[in-house]
Image 1 (cartoon, helix red, strand yellow):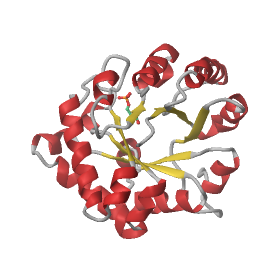
Image 2 (cartoon, helix red, strand yellow):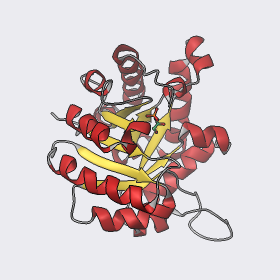
Image 3 (cartoon, rainbow, N blue to C red):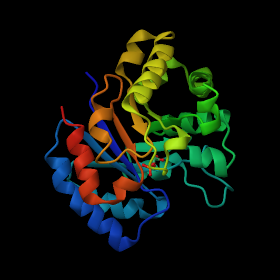
Length: 251
Ligand code: 13P
C-alpha cells in the first residue's frame, strides 16, 4: 500500500511573511490527515524559515532543486548536504522549468538524483512531455527515456528511495489538467516500465501527478489506481485550496 503524498512546489514565490502564514495555515490540515504525507518544497532561501515553522508538525519539506556537487567553486548553488542540514526530506530534481530554463539534460538530472540520494534526501524526479510530443503521441517514449537515464546511472533499486512526479508540460500553470484517464494511462505506463526491471520496486514507488492539480481536479485524479498524490504548483500557495487537495488524498 503506497501512502499518498501531496507536495507543494512554491517555485519562485513567497516572502518571509507569506511563507510564515502559509506554513502556519497548513499545520492543522496536515495534522488532520495522518493517512497523507504533506510536504512543501520551498525556494532555498526560505528553507531555514520553513524548518523552524514546521518543527514538531506533520509537515515535511524539501528543496526545489539541488546541485550535483558537494562543495567548491560553484557560485549560487546549494549542495544536497546543505539542504539536508536544514532538515529537508525531499529534493525535486528535473522539474521541466529547470530542464527548459537551465538546460538540464536527462544525464544532469540523473546526477542530481544520485547526489540527493547520497546525502539522504529523497529525490522527486519530475518527468513529462511537451505539448508537441503529446500531440505526436510520444508521451510513453519521452517518459521512458527520462526514466532510463536515471536507471542507467542509479539502478532500478534506487526507486525504492525516490518519488516520481509525472508532469505533462502542457498542463503546468495552464489550467489544462490532464484528464484522470490520460494521467492514469501514463502513470500505468511508468509503473509497467519500471516493473520490466523490477516488479517489487515498481509496486512500491509513489507516482505523483502535477500540472494544474487543484481543489477541483484533485479528487478524480487521486481516485486513479496509479496516482499516489500530487505535485502542486499554483494551488499550493493558497492554504484553503492546498488543504482541500490534502483532504482529497485521504484514504
Ligand atoms: P501548477 O500546479 O501551477 O500547474 O504547477 C505544477 C508544477 O509544475 C508543480 O511542480
